[in-house]
Image (cartoon, rainbow, N blue to C red; front, side):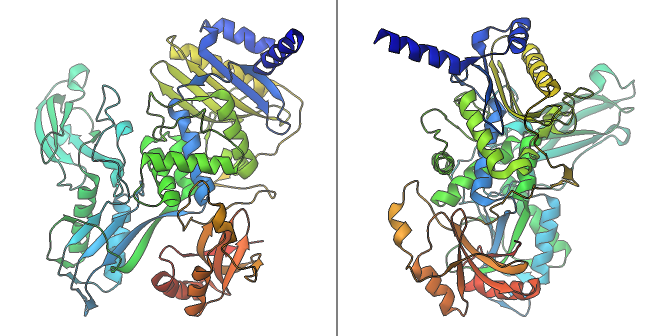
Length: 590
C-alpha cells in the first residue's frame, strides 16, 4: 500500500514539476521566489507538456482574465456578430411627424462614438422624420450594474481604465478637454452638457518646461452635474494638451449628441431628456450595428481595454440568461460555454468582471492553458490574431522587437501591483507552436518578472523541431483563416440555462434538418444549442416563409435561400417585424 502511495506521489510530481534546465536557469537568474511563479507550456498539436511549475496554484490573473471573456463571447456569438443599438418609437409617423417618443434601447455596445451618432441621426432623417412631438428616451435597462462611474480600483479613479459599464455607453465614458496654450483657451473636445468644465488655468509667457508643461486636472462626481476642474500654470509656448478622464454620464452625453445632430439636420424635437424602458408595443424604426465582434475582441485584447471586456462579459451573460445583464449571469454563462467545450472551470476559476481589474479573480496556469488550447482547436489562427503580436502591435508592441520571437508570439498580458502575467502562443524556428502560460504574483519588481517571461519566450522561439503549424497573417485589420476552420457567426436568440435536457426533444422528428447551400443569402432567425420549438417554426410558416433547421454545433433556424442580398434584405423587413427582431442576413459559404 505504501509503495502504491509513493508511486502516485511520484506521478503527481512528474506531472506538475517538469522544468527544463534552461527555464530553471532563468527562474534562478530572476531572483523571484520560485513559489511566486507558475509556468505551464505545452505543444499545441500533440499536447506534450514541455514545462510545468506550480501549474495548479491559483493566481491573480490581472488582464489575462480577458482571455476568458473574449473566448466566451466568440463561442456564444461568433466572429461576424455585430452589437445592436435599437431605435423604436411610440405613436405614429405621418407626414414627417413622429407623434410619440423616439426610444433608444442600448444593448451595451461599447464602441459607440460621434461617427455612430451621425450615422444614427442620418438614418432617422432618411426615414422621413422631420419632427418629434415627444421626447428622445434612453433605455439603459439591458444592464443591471448600478450607476458607478469608476471602479475606484486604485489611486487613479478617473483614469480611462477604471470606467464602469453601462447599457447606453458612449465615447467609452470619457470626457476630453483640450487646452490650447498659444490661444489661451480651454474647451471641451465636443459639446457635452453631461459635465461642467471649470477653467482655473493661468497662461504664462515662459519656457514650456517643468511645472509649466501641464495643468492639474481634478474631477468632482459628487454633484448632480459632474465637474472637471483644471488649474495651475501652463506656458503659452506649449503645444495643445488633451485631458481624457471619466467624468460625464455616457447616456446623457449620447442623448445630447443625438439631439444636436438631429437639430443640425433640421429635425424639430419638442420633448426633453427622459430615461425609460421600451415597451413590447413599441415599433422598430431601425437597428444600428457595431463593427464585427472580431474587431471588438481584437481591440479588447490588443489594447487591454477594460471597458470592452466588461461589456463582452455582461452581454454574453444576458444572451444566455436574458436581460438584464448581471455579473452572476455572466459567470454562469462562461461556466456553461466552457463546459460545452469540455473545460470544467467552475470550481477552480473565479472571474469577477471579465476585465481582470480585480483582486478577487483567480485561476491556475493549468486551467488557463486548457482555455487557450480549446480556443486554438476551435478557431485556430483567427483566434490567435486577436491577441497582441510580439513586436508588432498591442501591449507587446515594444517587446521582442529584433529578436527571434518578433512576430512569432501571440499573447495577452496582465499587470497589477505585484502581478505580472503573460499567456498565449509562441512559434519556434521550425514552425512548432507552443501554448504558453507564465504567471508571476510576487512582491519582486515587475521588470524582473517581465525579463523572466521574455527569456523563456525567446528561448522557446529559438528552438527547432516539432510539427509545423501554419499561422495565417492579418491583412488590413482582417484575418485569414485556415481551410480546416469553421466559425459560428450567428447570435444567440434564446435564453439558455446550463442544464436543459428536456428541450432537446421538443422538435418533432419530421422537421427537416439540412445543411446550408453554397453561395446563397439567408436570413438567420435564431441559433441555439437546443432544438427550436415547433411553435417557432410554425410562426415562420404562418408568415409565408419555410424554415430550415441546420445542425452544426447547435441548431440554427434560417429562412432562404435568396439569390441576391437585396431580396434577402426585403424579406428581412417582414421577419424583423413579425418573427424575430434580431434576425439578420448572412451569406453562407460552403
